[in-house]
Image (cartoon, rainbow, N blue to C red):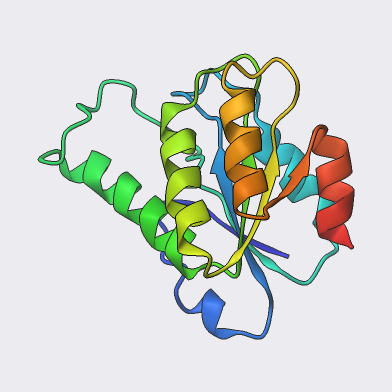
Length: 154
């Protein structure tokens, strides 16, 4: 398994025969559980490339503006990763609002161009919306992160 985080370039890794997975989901400026670490640790023996948007160091003072080069770099890395990966795995942490993750799910669900998996446990404030979008677009859903990880490993 190869894990790549921003701002590192991932394009060369996607040319290999290894499947690639983008980890889309709750981060909320570091307030969400580091669920990405759980996924990465669980897949360490799987021959795949994981694109993990959670930076090792995030500067909360970055202005979230398209004119901020660091912020733009992060957002474009994520959008490029979502568009380039073979699969996108979404996790909605029930303790967050995750507006960006909701937007990203809308982008992927409407594209029908790649594999998509969603874990949305009970308690997520917009679970009903996520359930309907996934049902309508025939997206595989999970209620538990552990069950989702086991499915992806298979």
